[in-house]
Length: 401
Ligand code: NDP
Image (cartoon, rainbow, N blue to C red):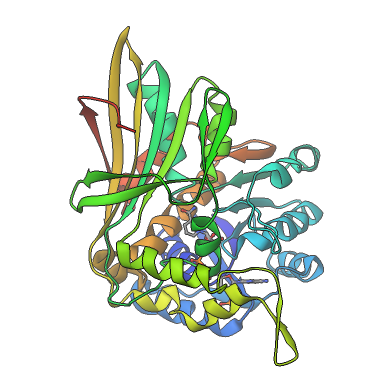
């Protein structure tokens, strides 16, 4: 029986809190805090309606470490689940250190003024978390998150050694809008417009953004163009699985999405440096976010499925073998259960499961950990039971370039 404090009442926070409320034996008391109280109240209302559970709500500016410390002291949670934006990661980790409280997130820290995400800033907390006797679990969403747990499951059960690993992220959903992103538009566009990067023989290989693509036939979705991209789990997997020679990440995009993005980039709307408009400084990408649909508003109209998984080639009993583990999630089913579409659902459920691993003691440690460092079995088991069932297939050949 444990108290949890969730920070961030967006799409992901909403799903995680709904799923926590469905598991009162693990999450005995839930407080949801966010920058705007109204965001928390909307989630609390929906949790009451769909699950029949009361949660507490609070207002916090998580950029302000002192405010977060005061909230943690008041709520006295066993664990803080950070589902705000990557910009808040370090401030929330500082508040956890000050109050000796465990920490979990789904996305690695990113400074506001540089579109650059890497683990170095959060890994730098390793010694301080160890000394404080607390645990941080980084990247407990789908990707990063489940895709890294899939890799450790492959290593534990399916292959003796992994030579190559490809992560394939397909959103086959249609929201009926000309242009919208399925999670926070600012973070999404920063990620998609970054140069591509993959791990090859101990080095990073960089290329222009969205310049390399191939067609893949996704189960229950069909054929889609998928593009080589950089994604944050590549860094932690390359660190924790040095045996893997090549690690790549692919994401599908429709032609209409890419056309809009190209135009927005060409006219300067994706810039993250300030410009003066009417005597006031604005960041074009933040302005763009303000005029785009809120990802949470897409839930009621999105149809179709997501299919995200890992293809790994390696050795099993002296033979080369290729295995594929993937998960298919239906947008309309996710909405019926939690009031949110599948992209929020596939992130919020693993956030709940990661929190359950920590609160039940299935995963424990002192210091800062990535998700692939723990035993995958109890996490994989909970995926099957809590809405994200997965499948394993053997393929005839590795993924082509
Ligand atoms: P949203 O933009 O929908 O929600 C973010 C929430 O954070 C909002 O409710 C917002 O507050 C709150 N927030 C922002 N700034 C602050 C602050 N300073 N203090 C307190 N609260 C704040 O994003 P998502 O729910 O889509 O994404 C949440 C996180 O999940 C992001 O970090 C994202 O990168 C990550 N993610 C991870 C994925 C994975 O697979 N690993 C996939 C998708 C997302 P308010 O509404 O109160 O103003």
